[in-house]
Amino acid sequence: TRTTRPQRLLKAVQDRAIRGNPKSVISVIDHYCRNQEWAMNVGDEKGFILDSVVSELNPQTVLELGTYCGYSAVRIGRLLHSGARLLTLEFNPDYAAVAREVISWAGLENTVQLVEGASGDWIPRLREHFGIHTFDFIFLDHWKEGYLADIKLLEECRLLRKGTVLLADNVVCPGAPDYLEYVRKSPLYDSRYFKSHLEYTKAEDGLEKSVYLG
Ligand SMILES: O=C(NC/C=C/[C@H]1O[C@@H](n2cnc3c(NCCO)ncnc32)[C@H](O)[C@@H]1O)c1cc(-c2ccc(F)cc2)cc(O)c1O
Ligand SMILES: [Mg+2]
Image (cartoon, rainbow, N blue to C red; front, top):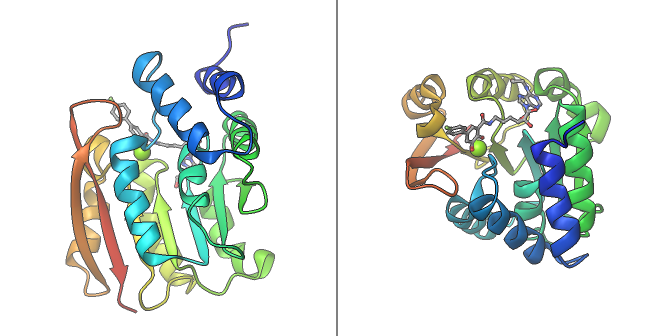
């Protein structure tokens, strides 16, 4: 049977990227998705904004919702200092299998931990299961209609603290209108929109950065 898009993306990484070199994994994926086959990675343009938010914050505990092929997990993981950890949740086993290989090819298996399952099931169990107290940084890039429910669940589970930064992909395209309205209206958040473009295209998209005020 035909290979899947994530499997073809993984093959490009294994054929063209330097093992243990996250930068080369990122550039191989961006080149492949721009020139051969589009895929829903955050990409290089929005990725540059993601890099600057992470570098400025220098987080110790990071949560990512929606691993897909692991592109943003590698992007974030490569910037984390020793001892810092990224937990990334993915409920599609085929995508999870590809992402584990991509993360391992980048040499980030000791920094990035992929947890298989749905965010709604895992968020309430992160404290007891992984000894997490609160997260410093959260990257939302899973189903757009799930963003709002999941940050409300994170609030409920007290996994946010004063200063926790949430960064949400695709708030324009495909869009997450209910999430945007919530973080922009709620007194619990200080929210700001970073205008950019949909990965590998000229269409508008952007990232919403929301600081939890606690
Ligand atoms: O739809 C997009 N992303 C979804 C990602 C889903 C990944 O996350 C996993 N996932 C989903 N929900 C959960 C969940 N929890 C369940 C929900 O709470 N718990 C755990 N894992 C979950 C999936 O298995 C996938 O691996 C998108 C589209 C475009 C796009 C733009 C324009 C176009 F024309 C076409 C496409 C651009 C983008 O950057 C995009 O991110
Ligand atoms: Mg996205």
